[in-house]
Image (tube, rainbow, N blue to C red):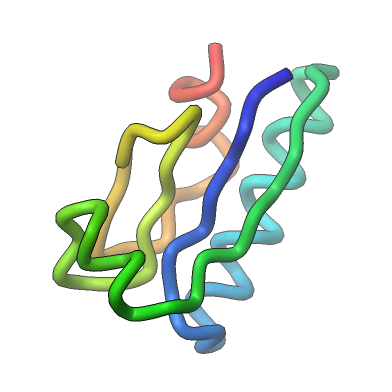
Length: 77
């Protein structure tokens, strides 16, 4: 199972990134869990300074932008 983490405070871009990540994982047909990380100290702990950010299995893959479902599918493969 892949662990997808959305790092952000819950802004509209964070919500869009969550939706894109769910779409990408569903299209790939993989088992996944989405966790929303909203605590600023935890986000900084990932080394992220600009949100939204996307981490897969604990590793930050995208920061400071909303990745498209296509981009996220490539990261999940």
